[in-house]
Image 1: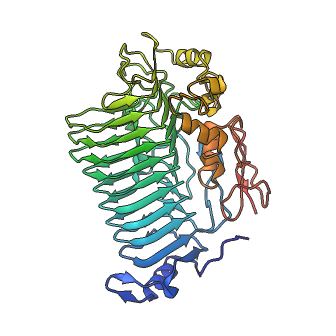
Image 2 (image 1 turned 180 degrees about the vertical axis):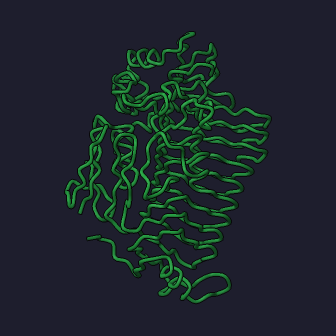
Image 3 (image 1 turned 180 degrees about the horizontal axis):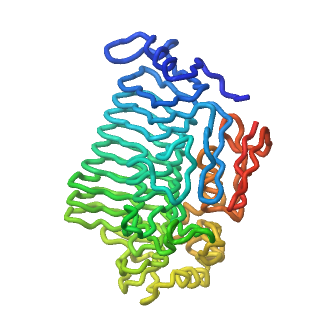
Length: 483
């Protein structure tokens, strides 16, 4: 049984709309009974989408999903749903909404959020190739955007998982005060996050991405790009006061059974890219750990005029640059300092006067990056299909500047402290992010985590088992149903 007490219970879309519509209006805002936040539990599935456009509330209303929660994955595919007792298939529209929170919901076909404000999308699985189909890696994504946000104010996306999106997990335009935190992803075809037109005070914190999730395989006829970007701005709009902190882009395992049609071993993922004609102003980029297979980790190019760019205390490893990508400077704009950087370019300004820069020469073997840095104490191993994010732990301990306890630290030392000492990572959150994080970054179980393969009825990680699903797992994980 769930430990969460709901104020209301509904079982389908009609009952949701009837309940919300029964609350009195004051202007265009619904007055929540009792004058305080309420929880509405959805106990049954929604089969043909849900349109909540125009529902503005004077206090926060949480639409809560119902367990048991599953995310069983094997052989490059999720098992067929349902993934909870309250799957929403056909998409969800929350245009012109206010004070709405979506919590613990599987949502097939994505979310539209235009002109919404003070809304939260939390611990939701947002899938472009929805139930009842299974999700093989070889299939293209089902939709363009996981979440489309236009002219929104104070919308937060917290601890969500994205899968099967062709263009981007999240596309923003004209947004203000967006927070995107703790997300993971699977089977993306292009970029994780895109921004068009003006975006103001946007914070990206604690998100994880790796090449294992990358559906890009170099097959042009299949609609795949030459490379993906983790975060890309396009068009003419400005990016004002953005913050990027505690994010990880990792090499990730290439599974032994994945052929060329599944994933190119050289598939590359750029980090933060500012393109188009728009300008970036007063950007803070700090405590990020990018060990991707692309030469550019932070590149503000295009025809924009970029000012006030602060790129400090990041670890940026230009791992295994793919053929044709060339060698570019990891950071192309800004005030740079206390960064740890490797590159094949003979330019050291990116690290800053107090940073650590390694020119590894004209090489393409990414293992050389990790061998060199591990020998210096910055890493505890070499990135490969058999190693997870555990090798990012500095082997030199506090004597190494990459370590958070060093008196003169450099690189993303606070991020490493969060992950290895404080346990602030998706593996300790629960459904839907713990399983993909364990599968992509901690498949050796070397980083302490509460995830054991099971979720309880509240979606939290659980060691107990009830009504188990025994499914073969390529990565030795059986995601089963907890109490």
